[in-house]
Amino acid sequence: FMCCFAFSLWVYPMRHSWTLLLCCCLVGCDITDGNAEHLKREHSLTKPYQGVGNQWDFWGSTLVTSSYVRLTPDERSKQGSIWNTVPCYLKDWEMHVQFKVHGSGKKNLHGDGIAIWYTKDRLHPGTVFGNQDQFHGLAIFLDTFRNDLHGMDRSFPYISAMVNNGTVSYDHGKDGRSSELGGCSADIRNRDFDTYLAIRYSRGRLTVMVDVDDKNEWKECIDIGGVRLPTGYFFGASAATGDLSDNHDVISMKLYQLMVDHSPEEENLDWTKIEPSVSLFKSPKDNIDDPTGNFRGTPLTGWKVFLLLLCALLGIVVCAVVGAVVFQKRQERNKRFY
Image 1 (cartoon, rainbow, N blue to C red):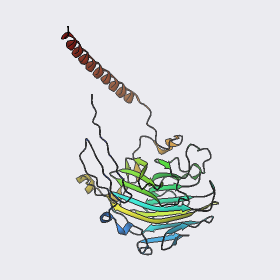
Image 2 (image 1 turned 180 degrees about the vertical axis):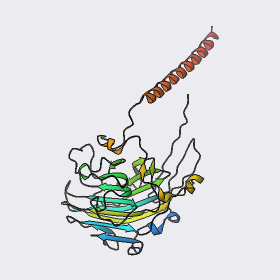
Image 3 (image 1 turned 45 degrees about the vertical axis):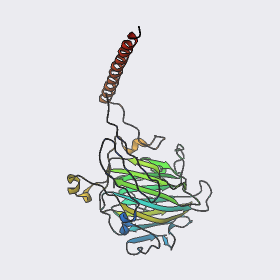
């Protein structure tokens, strides 16, 4: 009884190098990049920010300098954002964000954080890290302040992902736990070196990687399949402060096109009409009490129990047959010595 074993290997040896996807049972080529030839400049924000005012709009407390885009200063009750004016029609992409969160606040006396967006609407200020609630699309939250004093199973700052079709509200009181797809803790404040975030969307899989330890390598934070995102949405970044504050700086946002082959059916699909969604065994609300911040498996139904018992029975039969064959061979070999 054998099952096909397939695995994929992500290789991020250098921050701006390449990624290799290796499949053992499925033959395919998924060329990831960090190479200049795949950089989509119309969707990228880089120094000296010459595209600001043309390909990028900003709002609120955002300050554009020659070295960084400061979404909020280290002052209370500030909101700021910056948005790409060009809709993205790439089916497979990877966004690299270089950012810096720093301020004079001591431990647990800072907030609130940064959000990276890929959404239908742009420049709509609101209560979710400076952007509107009940959005359409994808958000990656870099949350630096704990609101839920009962959620002590995770440390902050905390990075999480959310996909919304416009019907779900972000719950600040629970730090968005009821709607998150997954997340990880990351020490992103007051670092003496550059910090980075990579958001990859390809073939329905969302992967978020971080480089916040000055090791020049990516560390996986979120990896979830079954994600459906349309084309024609906008990239952006926003930040907010409340009673506590921080400097929230974006150094660069670089979008890379992933060279991925799609089936004829996928190519003929109108990707602009796709509804943002995630195919999950359980609702995100079932994730509330999961201390790992990841989705638990579904309860074992009668059908699943039957399959497990069948697999176990087949395994026992295989072991018994192999054992009998080995025992017989040993008996025959021993007889030759007498």
